[in-house]
Length: 117
Length: 111
Image (tube, rainbow over all chains, first blue to last red; front, top):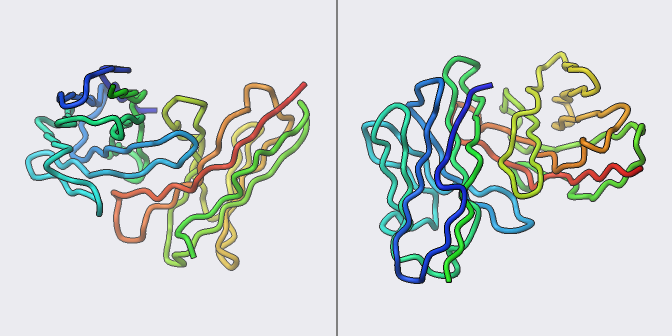
């Protein structure tokens, strides 16, 4: 399957600071990447769809000014959690759609565990 | 009705057992279906796609029942390493983008 990397794998930050998470597709070009969040014992929740060369599309209830997404190239999307608070502590996972298959398969990065103190 | 529904389990089965999960979906127009596996504190990994005719990959068999709007995953000869949460995924019709995840079914294979 396709390979997607994510960095950092975990981060601890103080309340009020900003954290940037990178998502890279390593062996394919992804015009579309996705950002999910998962709280303990809950299902993955899509936060936003990241489109290369255009603005991200946010899901209802997700603050676009708090979760800044930049799809800088066909292999890189970044998520910046601005002014993080303890309730933002979660497991953030990105995925990229592999255009070489049916177009529906998504491959996930290993995730970033964010803890805000 | 939720877009995708799964029994959260947990399903506790002994090693070597055969176990099956079902997942119901609400959109009758859905065309593609997937099973993902997620280990604790890890990212989901694509396990298999579900085709209309059903498909098999080693000990794993996936089937689609359009009339009743559910997909199933059968695991034969369960192994300890099969312990994980199995996620049913259904992309909405007409888009290659968003995936809708079920809450997952937790499987625990024991000695």
